[in-house]
Image 1 (spheres, rainbow, N blue to C red):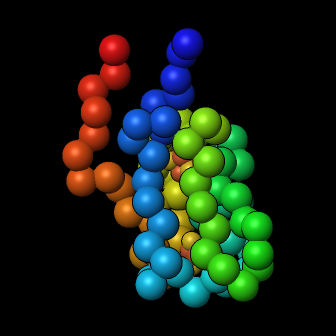
Image 2: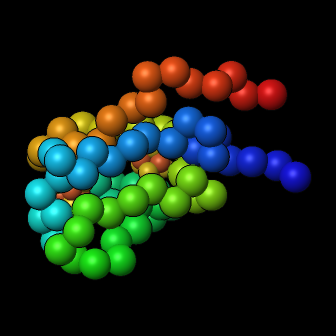
Length: 76
Ligand code: SF4
Ligand code: SF4
């Protein structure tokens, strides 16, 4: 079964930094809409099955709440 890059290397959303700003700016720049919100009052999460590990969301978040993984796994 093939895996998207994000399945291993998806960014993390730091719940302490995220202000749950409602209209997640980071989601708006995500091509696959891999950033999902269940509750508008809670931080979103990254759906690793949709994530391409492009990290375009990282600079988009005004709170710096989206973090690249510290170690990425090489693609095979
Ligand atoms: S991740 Fe960033 S842009 Fe998205 S809801 Fe949290 S603070 Fe807002
Ligand atoms: S912008 Fe890229 S790295 Fe961020 S969640 Fe979307 S696909 Fe993944």
